[in-house]
Image (cartoon, rainbow, N blue to C red; front, side, top):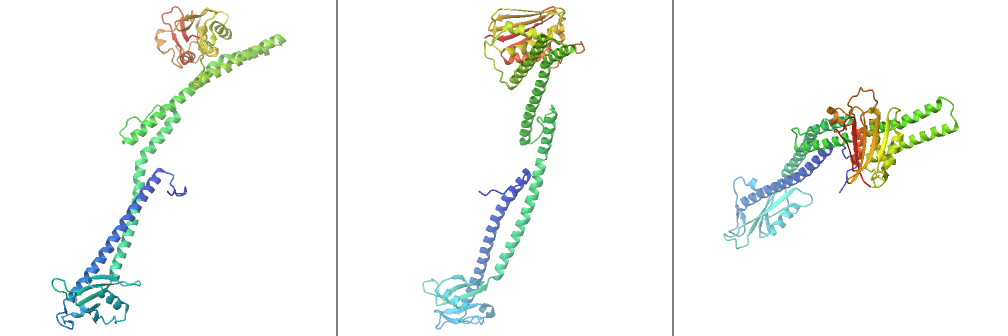
Length: 457
C-alpha cells in the first residue's frame, strides 16, 4: 500500500475525510466512466454494423442469381445503393465503387471478406476508420445451397468515433465537476458536523484549566457526540480530582511543616539574641537538626501517602515511646500539662513517622483548646491499638461535629488560633490509608476526645 507523503497528507480531520471522500468518488467515477464509454462504443459499433447489413441486404435484393451469368437489376435511386458497395458472383468482382479500383486496399479487403462466405464484418487495417460488412445473395429458401453472390458494403466510422469521443470528453468534464463538488460539499458538511466538537474541545480546555465543575452532561446531541461528551466529562473529573489532590497535598505540607519551621526560627532567634556557650550552641544545633529531620519525615510520609506507596509493615512502632517523642516535639505551653499513659510494649502495625503524622494534628488541636491538661492514652483493643487524645477545653460545638473532618473547616475561624482546618482531615486520611481510623467521641464531656484506631503489630 502506498503511503502519501506527509506533505500531501492533510493535518486536519476535515481535510482527511474530504480527501478520503474525493479518492472514493474518483475511483467510482473512473469505473463508471470506463464502463459507460465502453458500452457506448459497442452500441455505436453495433449501429454501424446494422446499417451496413441493412444496405447490403437492400443491394442483395437487386442481384438476380436465377440466371447465368449473375446480373444486377437496375432500380430507381440505385446510385445511393451503389455507394461503397462491392458485388461478387462466384468470387468474381462484378461491380465496385468508382472511387475504389480493383487494386485498392479497401477493394482487396472487401474481396477477402466476400470469400469467407456468410455474413461477416471487419475493419480495414492500418489505422483506417473504414468498416466493411458482407451479405450473401442468391441462396435458396432453405439455405442449403451455397450463395452464388455476395454483397459487401463499407462505411466511414469517423462520425461514430467522433460521437464516442465527444461523449468521453463530456463524461470526463462531468466527472471533474462532480469530483470538485464532492470535495467542496464534503469539506462543508464535515466542517459543519465537527463544529460542535471544536466547541466542546474549547470548553473542555477552559474548564480543565480552571478546574470548573461544569460538565457537558446528557444534552440533546448525536450518539457520537454524547459519547464524546461523556468521555470528556470523565476526563474533566479526573483532572479536577488531580488538581484537588495536588492542592490538598500542598496545603497539608505547608500545615505540617509550619511547626518544625517555627521551632527552627525560634531556636535561631534565641541563639542570636546574645552570645551563647559551646554547650548551648550544640543544644541549638541539635534542636534545629531534629526539626529539620522532622520536616524531612513529614515530606516523605505525605508524599508516600500521596503516591499510594506508604509502607505499613506490622510491628514497626512501639506506641508509648513514639507518643512521648511526639509530645516532646509539640512545644507545649507552660500552663498546659500533657500526660502520656499506656501499656508498655504495645506495638502498632504502622511506621513511627506515620503514627506521628496521625497523632500530631490531634495533639496540636488539643493543646490549642485545652485549659490546663491534655492526656494521651494508648491501650490495646480487639484486633488493634487505640490512642486517645483528650483535653479539658470547651469541646466541639454540636452543630459543627458533622463538618469536623472536612478539609478547611473550622468551628470558629475568629477564635484567635492560627490554623487552616486541615489537621483533623489529614489525620483521618492517613489513618485510613494504614487500615485504621480517627473519630470524635461526642459523648465525652467536658472537653474533646479524639480516638485513633490502628492495626496491631
